[in-house]
Amino acid sequence: MKKYLLILFMMIFGFAANSQVLISILLGDKLNTGKIEFGLDGGINWSDIHGLPEANSLPGFNLGFYFDIKLKHPNLMINTGVIVKSPLGAKGLPAYPLNNSYLDSAFAGGSVTRKLRYFNVPVMMKYKLKNNFYVKAGIQLGLRANAFDEFTNKIVDEKDLKYKLEIKDQFHPLDAGLAFGLGYRITGGYGMNIGLQYYLGLVDVVIDDASPNQYNRSLYLTVGLPIGKSGKKTK
Image (tube, rainbow, N blue to C red; front, side, top):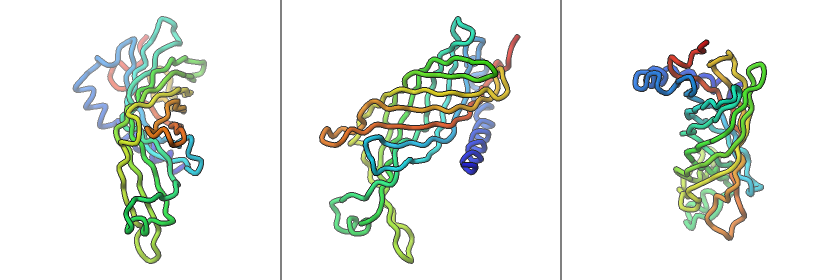
């Protein structure tokens, strides 16, 4: 866990240091106004596919940007954006036949990691609590970008065997479900925030109606950084 947290903070700060300069030059203060906060966020997520009982949780990294749109109520806002890099899936699946005698023999007894790639758009209501905490809840929509299975098998005295099979056509292009989370604004005002968010997929992602229903699930640990000069707290 400590290793993941260290990588998380290094990734966020390294990416933000370069991206903040580029975005500020291109867009200036237009994205950050008195009513809108724009920023970058990303971190670690642990996903699984509900409906595959033999599958294990798959760790990955996510990255995107967010908007907090303030409403008339001082503590209420709309939280949205795009999770550009959003790996979902599961690992530990048993290897299945590939209709190739050489491959079937090579990966007999091996395992499969299923990786699903989406562009995800959460749309949530966000409420600020006391002491810089906040909660949020709403929906999340996903557009499938790619999907593939990675076969692996251990061979004695040799390198591990690996094989990648694209399976994009087996999955629906759209995903949707509920999203909810909580977080903490570390420095108050418009400072850095850290959050925990859970996605509960409600759409069967597999096209084949003969197979069991399968739903995406994912737990996100993210760090968010506001971008732009007007991200500073104003009186």
